[in-house]
Structure formats: structure tokens, C-alpha cells
Length: 124
Image (cartoon, rainbow, N blue to C red; front, side, top):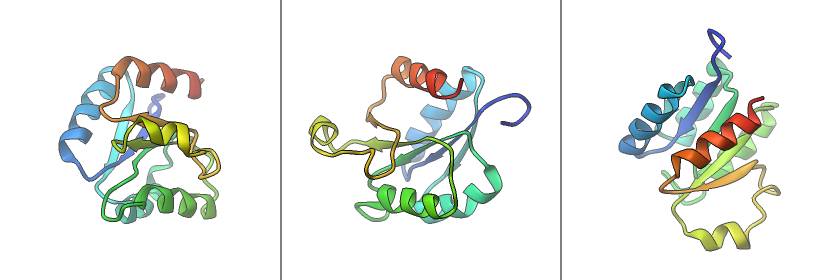
């Protein structure tokens, strides 16, 4: 938390997606920090101390998001991490994302109301 606002970290290689998420989140009182890759995100994580993390599944490598969350565990991360995926709704039903270390999955394109509702519930 910074300035009594929750800090949301977004790791995604799509600058348009980050811009859209930043607009929604900042308009609703969140501070947004972003990284363009899992590697950049890991470096930034140590300085940001986010309250919640949104990470894309497929960036520089197909499974960048899952590797990122494994590394976060090694760093002792306590913030909920949500997977961002455009891989299709079937993934949500066929993969146990909790075993991978994720608190949940957001299907792209993200419905703003659902995102804000989940953030509010997780960041009480």
C-alpha cells in the first residue's frame, strides 16, 4: 500500500492492455505499476511490494506467467497473483490454476466490473 492506496502490479507485454488496465484501475483508486516481461517484473517486484499482481500467461515465452509465479514463491510473495489469459475459457476449466500458485484467472478481454469486484474482495 502506498499513500493509503493498494498497489496493483501488471506484467504483460501488450502496452495497449497495460494502458487500458491502468485507466480502469487508477480511476478506481489503485496505484498501478507495470512491467513488460516476467524477467523485468521479477526485478521490479522487490522494489514495488505490490498488494496484488496480474500476470499474462504468454509473453516472451509461452509459460512466462507460470514461471514468474514460481519465482515469486521463492521470494516469499504473499500478494495474490492472478493469471491473465487469452488462451480460451477451456483453460480455466481444464487446469487447476491454484496448483500453479495463482489466486485466479482473468480471461482477456477482462470485464472491468468483474476485475474491480475481485480486487475489492481480495484486498479487504
